Length: 225
Ligand code: DX5
Ligand code: ZN
Image (tube, rainbow, N blue to C red; front, side, top):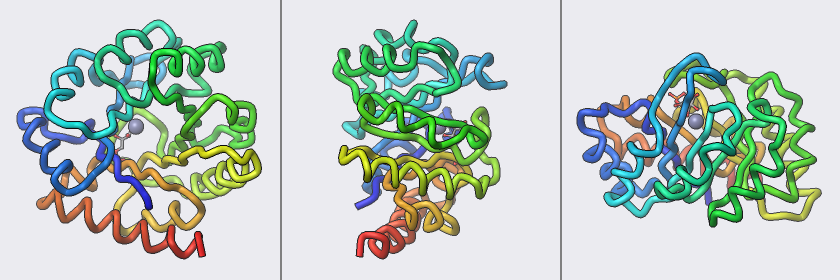
């Protein structure tokens, strides 16, 4: 079964709590929390104090996506604020494995992400250290961009590497996903789906979560057959 991870970057922050509860009621298992530093990506979002406040609202899995350089500096703060999983970028530091091990030592699930132009075979070296791989299907930095089709191949490669490793590692895809195209990535092995504008920009948040899940799940089941 796939999991849905609404990205709060696209939420209306004047009614953040209300909209998060709608995703929870719609059965979204995760909340995707995009942290940006204005250095690794050309945008600044929010940090631990913001999601610490929403932690008390919901028991959804807090999937914290760090788009910041040298993330090891902030792992303590992000873990303490209530992260369940923490994703770092392959391109954002040189001590990736140490950082992933540190994330695990703090009781969080470690994950590694690659940008759309990064060779997916770099993921091989991370397999012993991660519980999830995040394939970016837009250049990180902003919500509401168009899906980059090369992410389909990267997802397929990631799924093959995971299968060969024998480890139980989730594959998440993030950027430009909607009910219309989610099947493109679940059909090649993605099982955690991030969607920002397609969920928080929808008239009916609950219907949007359901439609993304139904379409994604259909293709995922076909793959498992
Ligand atoms: C982009 C972020 C994404 C983004 C997704 O840097 O990592 O999580 O918010 O938003 P949509 O689904 O609108 O592309
Ligand atoms: Zn993200």
